[in-house]
Amino acid sequence: MITDPFFYFCAVPAILIFGMAKGGFGGGIAVVSVPLMSLAISPIQAAAILLPILLVMDAVALWSFRGRWDRANLKILLPGAVVGIALGSIGFRYLSEDMIRILIGVIAVVFCLNYWLKTQPIDARGPSKLRGGFWGAVAGFTSFGIHAGGPPVNMYLLPQRLEKSLLMGTMAIFFAVVNVIKLVPYSLQGSFDHTNLITAAVLMPVAPVGVRLGFYLLHKVSEKTIYRICYFFLFIVGIKLLFDGVSGAYLSRF
Image (tube, one colour):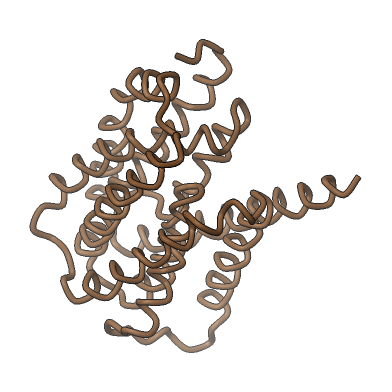
């Protein structure tokens, strides 16, 4: 297993943050987890260690939001996600980590600015095969590489103004299925070596703590506040990813 103390200094908060997002608190903030762990190890290894831990989080989230999901949206999102995962397993090797950060950052920032700068209230939208299929594919693609499928799914679901537990339950089902599917290409690529699996097992107890903490905060905070938090963190994460991606791409030229 990894024994570097600095790795665990980064990994424990990263897993807690991801777990809180799985539990419904903080929205797109989960996207910072792989970059945070990448301060100590490579992003590819960070993603491999996180995936088994995410499956535990998914189980806790499914139990927490049991019976609360939007079937119509899941029927639209999941086929798109399968396409995105397939494209990710083929195409991610040709995209640099900085390019992926820039892509996610642009999407997140533009979405938040559009929400904040509108002079008229955003109308609640229902499920859409076109929008849902597209965002589901983007979510599957970005989730495959750095477990950053949250922002694209938020792009599609947040404008629908679903009740908060229904929103989080739908996302819990979606990512549980997505993460199980990702096991296949991750295994074929040899991501689950002994070091990664043992390290994931050591960190596993942190996962349910984060999810239950997020679930607790979700039910202590108003729905309006939850959405404000979602958009706020989505914007902050978008700016951070843009900065990291652009600066990384610039420095790589020298």
